[in-house]
Image (cartoon, rainbow, N blue to C red; front, top):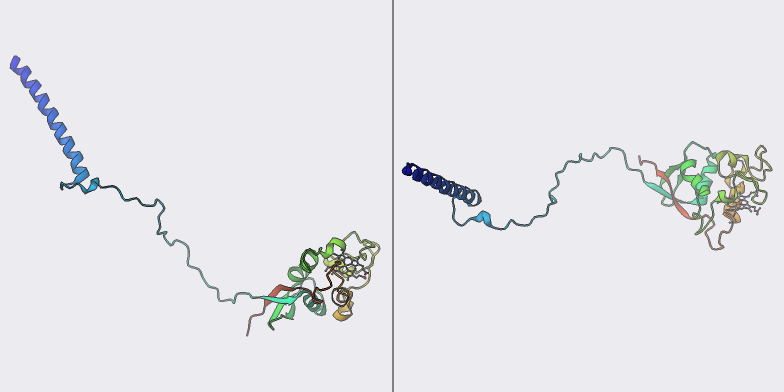
Length: 213
Ligand code: HEC
């Protein structure tokens, strides 16, 4: 009876030792493998958590066969003149030769109208033409609405919205037009234009070059 108890205690003790040895062995083996120098115990080199080699997952850029469009440059008065001489259409593109001699096309909406609607173009601090010439048809500002194409066609010195005024396009002859007179000959517009500003107005980017044949 006493022997049985001793045996039990001994085997429990032996099992305990065995489990400890196996456990320590397992930990050592998983950390150091079969070598004794235990390289896995070395410090892990510090690496940036951001992957530096980004996989090239974007689609390859396709170059189109079409030539990229080149923007042209021209003096603002010359651009308006080219448009008027070409018949001042609201929608049809018109042609002009830019300051570098390129053949270019432009349109009223994209190229001419911004010269009337936007400030700061003709000189630094310049008001937009439409600051004065708008649908209110003031007598003091020549009764002219430059804010829309229809307003421009209706002309100047109008007393109300339903009367036609003076043609500002010179019937299509640029040099005979009121616009030419005010913008170029008298250099009056936009009102407040400095003495030393160029008569032909600032050089602007407009239209695009026609593809060379
Ligand atoms: C600060 C106000 C003001 C601005 C901005 C202005 N104008 Fe005028 N505009 C006038 C006044 C005032 C007159 C009348 C002056 C006169 O008869 O000498 C006039 C007259 C004109 C006339 C002649 C009309 C006529 O029947 O005699 C034209 C054309 C004209 N402006 C075009 C323009 C254009 C184009 C712009 C923009 C580039 C412009 N104006 C900007 C005030 C302005």
